[in-house]
Length: 89
Image (tube, rainbow, N blue to C red):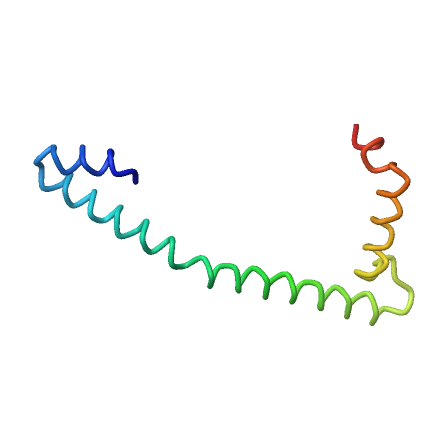
């Protein structure tokens, strides 16, 4: 909540307006301090996904699932050749 919006809510004089302004201010402060843990969960989630993907692609003998490394190499090759944007367009 911006300072102007909070000021307007508090100047309205109503107890509900003041309570809402204080709750929104506290929520915005909490959001600013929570980003490191959100980032850690995001990185951990993606890491777990990549590891699971690797294990699934490796565990199946005859598989249509490429490994993460094969996928990364194929993406690099398509980008080098300029085919990705050509096919997207």
